[in-house]
Image (cartoon, rainbow, N blue to C red; front, side, top):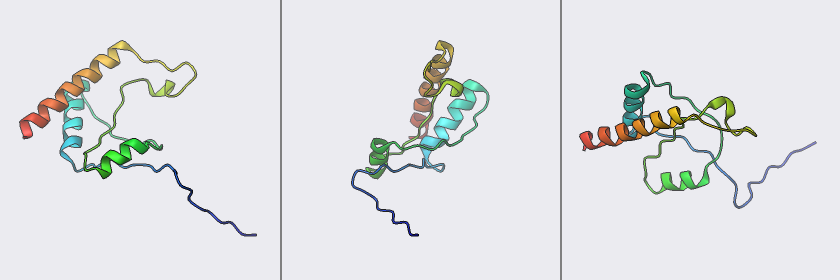
Length: 101
């Protein structure tokens, strides 16, 4: 037997966020400040528009504050308290990047 793979037009590609960037350092620092710890990890997937931003030179970092156990579940939901912490992290990221500028 044989197998031939052909990448069609419009295929989706994954992305990898830079772990050496100012954005990543700010995200980790802000997360540690708000949550007491930061545990960066990766989940597979494809976000074509995000990849286009990377190609455009943007430092793209992706984070979430919902419940991983309900991620993409039929009954996906999040806690308001987690979204509040997420907003505090966002404010911290901006503050860290302003301080670095």
